[in-house]
Amino acid sequence: MHIGISGLNQSDIGVKTIKTVLDDYGITSSYVGYKPKKDTDCIIVTGGDRGVRNYFHKTLDPQIPILGVSESEASGFLAQIDLKEFSAYVNRIKKGDYQISEFTRLGVKIDGRPTYSVINDVAVFPSKSAMLMEHILRVNSEEVWHDSSDGVIVSTPIGSSAYSMSAGGPMIFQDSPVFGIVSVNSLDITRRPLIVSDSSTIVIDDISARLYCEVVLDGVDRLRINNTLECTKSSPSARIIKMKKDSTAVSALTKKVKLAEELLNMPPSSKLLLKTLEYEGSMTQKELAQKTVLPDRTVRLALRHLLDKGYVKKKISIRDARQKIYEISKID
Image (cartoon, rainbow, N blue to C red; front, top):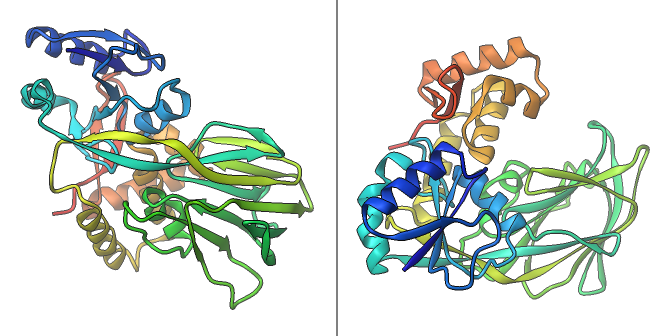
């Protein structure tokens, strides 16, 4: 058996820890980055959900199954295992005692140029907020709507519970062969989210706004777009190892619904920070301020509110003991 390890770099503490544990169990392993060898049985990816998404954005071989590992205690959709408990699962990995889930990826072309495939969603927005974007949505060459809105989100089933759900989109079960489309804050009050077959070709074109528009890929990269976004199902799917039975789509969505009910009266800044931590994983206060574009004082007060309520917990960074990181607390 040969296991690959992927992370920020070979000197990353998560990568080193996993390498040491595998060596102790007599399992051959090597750091492969985003270029796994053909004889690799599986790949351990550090960095939590964000690390898993980043891996599939860059890998040259998405068919090799991966196991996502988080350096914190907060489990996610894609990375179930905490680094501290990794050694408890090594024997199961060695025996192949696990399930592999297939996650549909969305292939993206911007103005005819292919980009990497996304796991969660692709969105089109004006480069400046509080500005309308006019566009036409076509599905399989047929015009569906001509709309003016804040933007458009196209999501996979796993991505439906992230940005898309925040914008009013439906929650889609993981194994459903569909994509979701949401026009964000449309001027047409009758406009509703759409569900289309994942065999569809989704095109958003004739895009225009007072300033230029951008495509946001999995909430990470922002690329300028002139006129046309094309989305289709990407092959192969992302293959992710699941070790825990309690991390099903049903239980995960139930937790999200419970959380939504509890947070109805939460201040907007706290909601934004909580959603950012859910989507991006553990972050420092500085990273939260940069990501949300909120003032430092607002971020500080919102974090204090979330800590007091128990929605977020604070830990010392495993990479830098001087840094404090924040993450979502588990919901029982």
